[in-house]
Figure 1 (tube, rainbow over the protein chains, first blue to last red):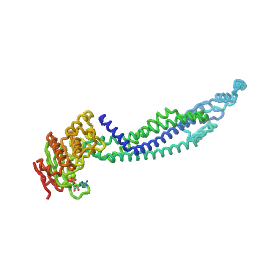
Figure 2: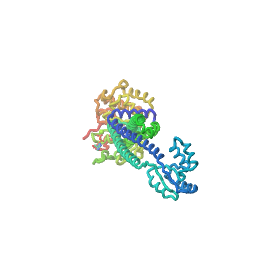
Figure 3: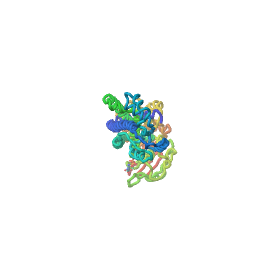
Figure 4: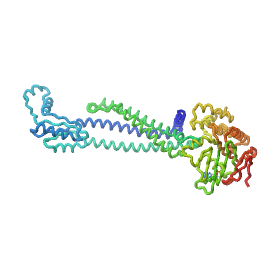
Length: 303
Length: 229
Ligand SMILES: Nc1ncnc2c1ncn2[C@@H]1O[C@H](COP(=O)(O)OP(=O)(O)O)[C@@H](O)[C@H]1O
Ligand SMILES: [Mg+2]
């Protein structure tokens, strides 16, 4: 296609939108709401995921051994555990390290004195352990049972937090958002379809003449495809801007107001978030416009 | 240029053949009138020549192209070699005269620098150079038909088809259009004119093909308008 023809198609496409402004706006509107919701859900889910990740690394499982177990056996148990898929990180805490960190907490004020009074004796000499974090907290219970069943393991301790509730909430939010977005996607395609059908009806005579003069199918369709793409593009840029502003404000508001949250939880930075959200939203918006216009022109513009 | 062999055409759902066993041969450079009363099949013939529809049976060949073998995607290429004008002009109402003619060139993706040169030349040829900024509704019927003619000719077709081009015009304007068609034919374009205009057909002394109820009842060089019985 020549540049001049391309520009002509673009001009005609924009003219279609202007001539048919109400329907074009309706189409843009549904895409905007669709991608706005998508953007919001995306931000929530990404932050949620990142919070879960932080949480996962604080939820640890400690494995303690039978009294008098040899270092060799401890190593064997360690190798067995390390082979499991659930394991994310795994550290060995020797009895000395355990005692040392315990003592540092307990005798914070007079640590050196206290250590001297024990004179090399380790009150926690049976407290060597493996400290394990899991890749996925949802099968924590099973994994704990497995650890308990190992020979030479005396005790398995999990830190208090269990993630069941949060996990369940997360999947409900996920499915609900997918459902709502899917419905909105269908509505957008339907509206774009209508918009372009009207455009084609209005320009019926022009299209008939174009064909008689010898316009290629592509040339006849191009303005309508441009129309679809522009609707999709505008429909994706508006919610991106809105979500950006919203995210920016919400994050700074929350961080400024609620120390509890900002101390325990880091929001995913806005740039990192949008480096993914922008291409996805633009692709969905343009994709919707393209699909809508291609389906419609296919149906109405046979030679 | 045009070659029809045992062409029959029946509209979907129609009872009778709109065209029944039509055989026509038109050489390059000819000027041919097609006459016949309303409903005799003249427009159907034009539509077949434009490949707007397929014959029910028979063969059509135009400008060396066998319509039976023509692939769908090559139809635009064929149509670029054929100019066409209609009784009701079929101009685009929301565009100026200049844009209406330029439209035909944009559609076939002519570079802009050619469009800028050829459109004014074409409007001069049909005597409307000074009206290029007007809109169709600001022109008389005769002027509108001349714009349509300019649009049909700007891509330099080998064949010009005109379906009752003077049907909506007074005698003076009708003659002007006919003179233009004759001019164009003299410059080498094959011209086929469907008409009802007895006076013009009788005066111009061209080849006349007469249709009646879908059949050719006469085909004469330097013929005249045949009255219905
Ligand atoms: N779209 C159509 N559907 C069905 N029948 C048609 C259609 N167009 C024309 N006809 C019929 O075909 C015959 C020829 O019509 P047409 O070619 O338009 O005649 P003309 O142009 O000579 O007046 C007529 O009997 C007409 O009623
Ligand atoms: Mg007719």
